[in-house]
Length: 232
Image 1 (cartoon, rainbow, N blue to C red):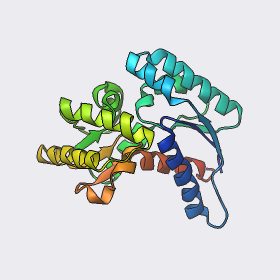
Image 2 (cartoon, rainbow, N blue to C red; image 1 turned 60 degrees about the vertical axis):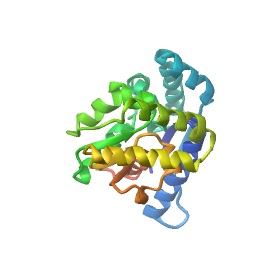
Image 3 (cartoon, rainbow, N blue to C red; image 1 turned 135 degrees about the horizontal axis):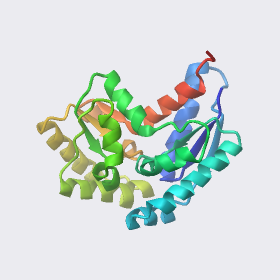
Image 4 (cartoon, rainbow, N blue to C red; image 1 turned 120 degrees about the vertical axis):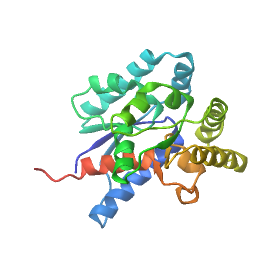
């Protein structure tokens, strides 16, 4: 089994999900008492969120690159950034290490392609929906991602930062997000991306009414494939 290095804490709510899913996945594939070989660097999210809001991606990228470098030196054979938005600095992180960075955008896109889906509605933070770094990654797989209108983007962003990242699950917010999804379906979406690793805490994929790719689950699956790949 290859050892995975996780850069977490963004937020701690979804990092907990990563830890659980990776261990459950290893046990499901190998059986018995097997569990994942993991190293975790969990950052304090508050300063990172301030850098995001200020557009100081260079400092944020340097912070995560340092974490990745330490994880590699500690024995990680691949690194995961356990968040979608911070993949805006994925190139900085990848440049700091000699082991693979398993990219959440690639894992999400591949999961959509594998299901024959083409036009996903991307639900995420304002940064992930509006900046090109994530949509470009999806488009490189032949996908045609949609994003909600401006008001819906602001509402989603607030739900993520003010509620989900702080462990708050609100029924009214669930209803609001479902309305955004229904609008996307009416405009031609054939699927939905939970492009924030916390959205799976708010919504059940089975109840959405469109095929869903939860980016956290897709990322974990890609990581398990890497960790448990048989030598050539």
